[in-house]
Length: 137
Image 1 (cartoon, helix red, strand yellow):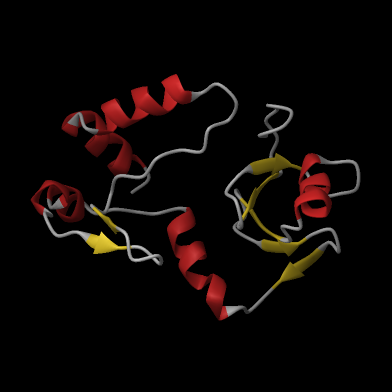
Image 2: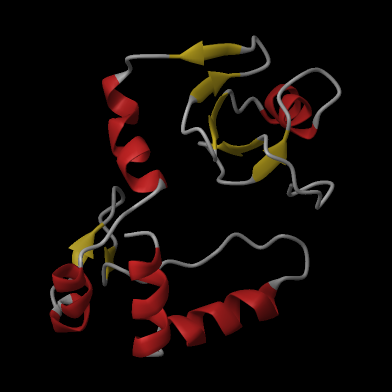
């Protein structure tokens, strides 16, 4: 959890800012975030279900959330992983900024810059990266 730094089977990611929070009931960090920040749509990181807070209802059959569902628990084939280093073509994000697909930063969770730097460095060690990408397949 971004606030309490506790782990739980019920962690929800805010789809507006990307921070993650424990629980969704009243008196939980996710509920408080929804009320204070006006961020209302969350995804349950384990189940992949979408919820509207603070009203606490599940969002079902919403086509605009399909891409998030597919990206939540990605699976890669060995052939896809082998092609990662061949890609030299830049893509564009929603704001028109160019980026090389596959390299994404992390949210800063209060003094975790060092962790982001270490993970980014390890992600460039091909055998290690490939091991973790293929672990879920």
